Image 1 (cartoon, rainbow, N blue to C red):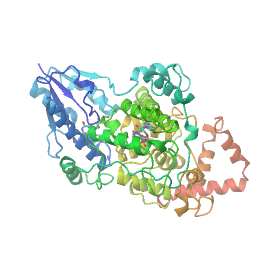
Image 2: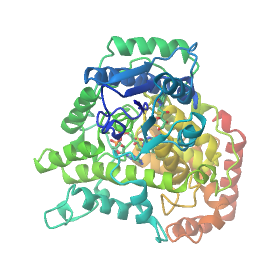
Image 3: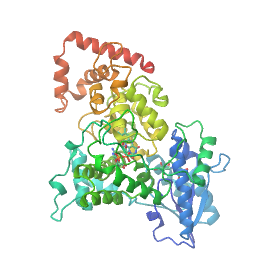
Length: 510
Ligand code: FAD
Ligand code: DLZ
């Protein structure tokens, strides 16, 4: 009897282990564009185009490799609009002996799939996702018994495990594990940022763009100027482009923000790594090779590899170790609704406008925009974690629950009590001024704090510090902030708190 092999939209890898030991003549691969997956959040239109087009290209590739594929293309009138319904129908038609799939990246879908053996009346084999360097169990074993989980120590384990940037004596290349201190330069236009890698849409992608414009027109963002890669081959070309043109400066300007350049020296590879078009270890090896051959400096290469080997693996471990309770965490007790300008970009705060506008156009913003601009504002303003998490899950082409949730709920909102950071990444307008050239063009004045045209980040920062004294005053990394706050004259403190209250009361008009 035949097996049914389900491949999800973010599992577009030819050696995905659901295919291991399968029989190309007997078994059936099932892939489906379904309303339930395309609508569980307000996915950016470009994310849907990317996934549907990449899925269609991948299915063709499998067929030309000799697999039998049942592919459901999206149509609103399709009878089956969930993965369960599509799989259920194919199980019956095939009289399948078993469903085989690789574990998915979301608790929501994991719960559904876990119930299929009962609801569909067929055994379901869920295989581990070997595209990650650490298994869920390996992470849990590493975490067990530790008082605090710190990415840096886990990252070193991953370096040892993969041998990436390790000498033959087992020491870190360059004599240090971490070169982060070198990676904080402001970018002033030089060296020029490279143009991002582009692929012009082929006939399949153009069809999908039409479909998304027609049926997902009310979703966030635009399909205009779609230029993501949608095949593994093109994603590899995107990797090469990054290594050749951006990696050498990746480290120096990793934390920079620009008023004019959307992408700076970032790799723009996360949509491909997360959907399976690129393998994370291959990406790290390519970067390491650039250092060994003298094409990129160590601070750039180590910094880049740390993001993938360290942060990416670490947040995944945190997610699976703590779900489902993790999604409900709100340790700072936030209650405020997400301001509408997160969806429109219509705000006079230049940095926020620029980050949201880039997000709307590109389904992309780089890490520091996500963390220190839109994230920092949500933290300071006390936005409900649930609402800001849903925003991040919707608006980026690389967003999946396993990676978005720990980054937003943990790293940005500190709503989990500090798994991902020993202190919150709260910052005033001064940080944005130091790392960007936005402030010179902003309606608000970064050097003012209490006046009606003062940068909102300034008063909101002190309001955050003040209202969370019980949460953070004893944190050794926050002591200085509290000493600085307490040193200010009472009238000044009062004026700052009042300005912040006023900003919060008028949050929709900022
Ligand atoms: P680069 O700056 O070139 O970094 C290289 C790679 O490192 C990325 O492609 C990515 O695979 C990995 N990486 C870097 N930082 C992280 C991180 N903190 N967590 C996991 N992987 C990381 N990343 C996602 O892939 N999906 C998300 O939904 C997502 N949401 C985020 C939300 C917030 C609030 C923050 C602060 C970060 C989020 N990140 C997310 C992490 C990071 O911002 C993106 O991975 C990165 O911006 C993607 O762009 P890039 O490929 O150009 O990255
Ligand atoms: C994100 C997404 C979207 C938009 N559409 C589909 C789809 O139609 N079919 C599918 O198999 N997968 C899709 N995905 C990806 C899944 O939602 C993803 O597998 C889960 O979020 C788990 O990571």
